[in-house]
Length: 118
Length: 402
Image 1 (tube, rainbow over the protein chains, first blue to last red):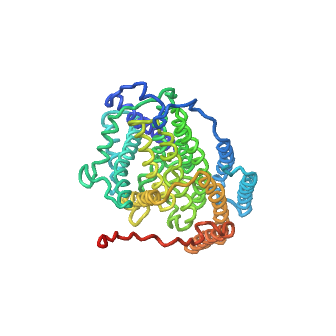
Image 2 (image 1 turned 90 degrees about the vertical axis):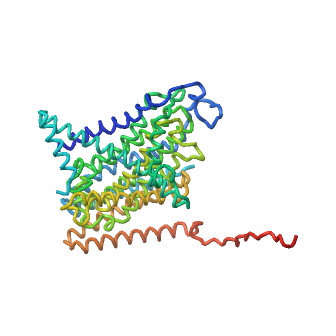
Image 3 (image 1 turned 30 degrees about the horizontal axis):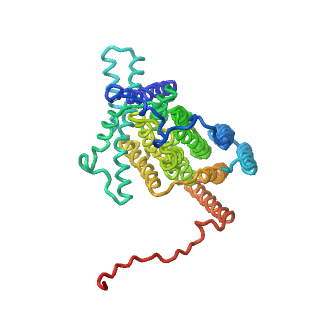
């Protein structure tokens, strides 16, 4: 078991190291001649107006909130699915009720217009 | 016999031990070398994939595709790689340098890390952790962070808009994806990827075809390819989050996208198409590797085919499709699968009956969905047959009269 996690740890190192080398290598191979025009923000040749960090639509925020609720509740279902053989029908029904509550939450968000892209 | 990979690793272990290194150190070293080889092999797979995809794209669009560099254009990706290595990596003014430079590496790493847990043959199981599915979900979400970092740090409005879209899309489609991942977990009674493969004496695509279909759709949205390529819509926001990247930094995003598609193929193969299972795969593990790659390619080809066939959707359509169709449908499928599975196991049904009833339940749910869609929107433009006026026929100019 520990070996498996060790492998993942080493894999993380390898998976970061090798792309990092690929990005760093052009430092010696590729030319480096920065100039003012090249470093400008690219907007199809137009001069940039104002700050890049603009205000964003509140809808993105609402979708993120709905996602947060659903993702956390879904993670709660994983242990339920793993221990499925040991569960009696009663416990399965409890899981179903939990999913029904999730569905009701979705319906609530839907009715409140949180899922509309206006 | 029949398993060169373990043979080589055994040889490597013995070699290091022969050099007089400690047992613990050898174990760690050989694991690290294994990981590094797998990472490199995945990156090299992309070299082939780029050629394959361009050839498929060419054929589907009635052209030949790359055919200049080498036989059948096989050396084209190599030429591209050499070229991209010699291109300057620019950093725009006012960029957040740290985040800007970490993002491409993180995007690549998030895809590569999934390969740590995928079993490729009966004896090549990668890391057999008991929370494999959760690990895949967790690591896969790192890609979202990388995209947001890239968009935010670029100091470019297009990049930021692309990143917003990407996060909204990926975060939304994550919900049905995680929910469909629950179904193989439920059927296999385990979160370990290897256990899920072992449990597929009948492929899960037969027992849970709807879950497989939804997983395909949602993971396509996770990759951000057409028809879900709003995040880099060329005609609207130039290229989305990676406008400001050049050279190998852009290359990393490019490669990570290709590898992500290939990884999705591998996930579909492992979770729904029985992974390395096939005739003779237990006794000859090398055959398992072969089956695994064939199945992965099937998933990859399917995604490429869809990408080249469908136009881009609008963002409101995209989000409505997810929240108002996929998410409720997945919840219904989950409930139906859970109840039918429990009822059948309690009744002690035979395997063939179990498979048949599960398949019937899936077909019923699919049919019910169609009925609901028909009643909710009977006059959707796609459903009503439209009469088009007869096409004007080009008439040859009558040269003889003049």
